[in-house]
Length: 506
Ligand SMILES: NC(=O)C1=CN([C@@H]2O[C@H](COP(=O)(O)OP(=O)(O)OC[C@H]3O[C@@H](n4cnc5c(N)ncnc54)[C@H](O)[C@@H]3O)[C@@H](O)[C@H]2O)[C@@H](O)CC1
Ligand SMILES: [K+]
Image (cartoon, rainbow, N blue to C red; front, top):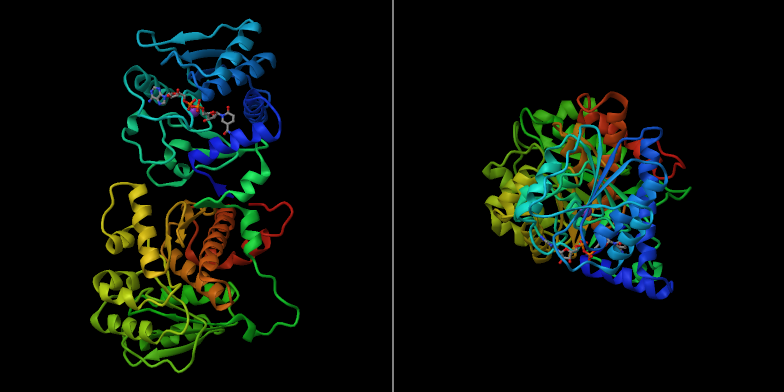
């Protein structure tokens, strides 16, 4: 699903109006009908008071149109025009007139007005600012936003939580509505999925306004939200007469004394994700452990008891993982250098592998094209240096990925894969997956997909999706706290199956 920038959202609007030969108010009505429908389904037989705060632009117009629909359906509504300017949009004025025709006169609030009472349990509709925000909300508008945020109401933002920019980091976090749910129009917005701003959007619902299909299909975007449909398209079906040689040989290099479990997890994950063969390379202390816990895998050892040292590998895997549980000692770093120099296929570098790269930046030049790095934010910082906000982080990460021609997976609540100047945002997964070994499983899955012939970017995007989906199944069974990394591995089958189920449980 494409994530459009602000300019293209406005363009989509204009082109739709032209091609469908409609007035702009028709789109506003569609927007209001969608929110009304969503709200009605959620509320069922409940009728709380609904307070609608409407700005004077088209976001406010959406709010006024929604107020009319709610009023006509018997809901109790309180409508406030947040009167911060005389420059009211045409469709705002049209919907104000329509509301008045329905005998509802909104209360105009300004600098000197008392802030309205917002009793606990009521609903607030935030239609103050949408994508037209061009500066931070200040003065009394900021106070109003804080009043909404401190109330114990359920807050639903129309299109965007008021005060949140689409294309840059907020300059004043106190001046942004904190929504419980954001109902956004047609396109997901990038800021809803970035760590510093996701909290303002709450649950995100994307509703369809029927905007021009051709424009959407033919306009490029830099960022994508990966939906189930997208993931389904990435999946490569297996031929009936396939044999294990068709699904590649994946090599997992890692482990040190006390950390062999990481390799066990990655190895199991690589097998369960479908690699034809998996070989694990561990220090000698890991040999018995791997052979007894994962009999399906082959095991070779470095000539050292407790940590990895340079070791010859006498076969050519289709993909390799390096770094999990490896430590970052001198000899282990030397081994990474050897692997990078000899690499015939994409390497996935994780955990201590990334820390080694951060400490020996000359090794970066050796990374084979389309290698995959899977840092969590701490590891990323070691690699890129600090950043001032999410946007700077993404720009730095894009530059890094371009410079070294690698795929970066920034792990987090919404993991982001960066490759070829594009961002792919994942939405599967849950807080239960913040558990030891979860990253090792991810490395195994992605590398397994590479071994099976998936392009590195696709393997990363699809792997992150499957990993999150498997975690969702694991959490669904026993709750967040109970999930351990092994459960993610054990639910990979469910994750694959869910791609093609008509009504997936997750
Ligand atoms: N295709 C779409 O996505 C559609 C969008 N619509 C709505 O239209 C919205 C965009 O409407 P607008 O472009 O009128 O913009 P907004 O309604 O977001 O903002 C309106 C006004 O606020 C002013 N403003 C911005 N920041 C301010 C600040 N900090 N303090 C005081 N004033 C400030 C702006 O100058 C502008 O006049 C969308 O977010 C959406 O809600 C819908 O009506 C239907 C179709
Ligand atoms: K809003």
